[in-house]
Image (cartoon, rainbow, N blue to C red):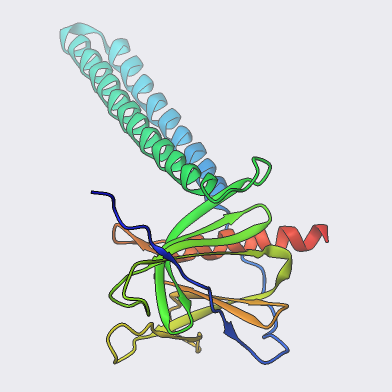
Length: 247
C-alpha cells in the first residue's frame, strides 16, 4: 500500500512594522569546522606530549638497568601502545559517524533542487512557524540561502493531513537576526509565541527579519537531546554577514 503524499502547505511568515530591529554585533564564535580543527590540533598536541612523557619514562628506566627496569620499560611501552590504539579507534569511529551525518545532510539538501554550485554549510533539525501552525523539519544554511523543508503534522494542520512546507530566503534579503524565546501556548496544537529575548533570558529561537517585512521564526534546535541552538546561530550569522560583505 502506497503511503499518502503530503499536501503542500502555503508558507505564511509573520509580518513586522518597518524598520526592523537593528542587527546585533557579529558572532565571535568560530564555525563548527574551525572549532573541530582547533580541537584536533589540541588533541594532537596532547598526544605528542603524552608520547614524549612515555619516551622519557622508558629512557629513564633503561638507564637504571636491571631486570626490574626492563620490566618497567616493557610496561611503559605496552601502556603507550594500548592508549594509542584506544585513541585511534575513537578517532576512527568519530570520523565515520561525522562522515555519515554529513552525507545524510547533503542528500537532504540536494533533494531541494539547488545547483551543485550552491554549497551546504550545515543543516539543523528544528521547528518553524507558518501562520497558526508549526512545522517540524530541517533548516539548511548554504552559501546564498536560508532554506526550510519540513512537515505540518496532520494532527495540527488545517486539512487534517500531513502538509509539506518548504521555502527559501536569500541571505541578501535578511536585515537582521535576533535571539528569541519561545512561550508555550495553552491551546493544544498551537505553536509557541516567539518574542525577542529579554535581558537575562536563555534564548531558544532565531528570528530572521527581511527587507520584505517578514519575520521567519525557528525554534527548538534539539536533536538526540543535544541543543544545537548556539551552532545554528553562529553558522547563520557567519553566512549572512559573508553575503553582506560581497554586496
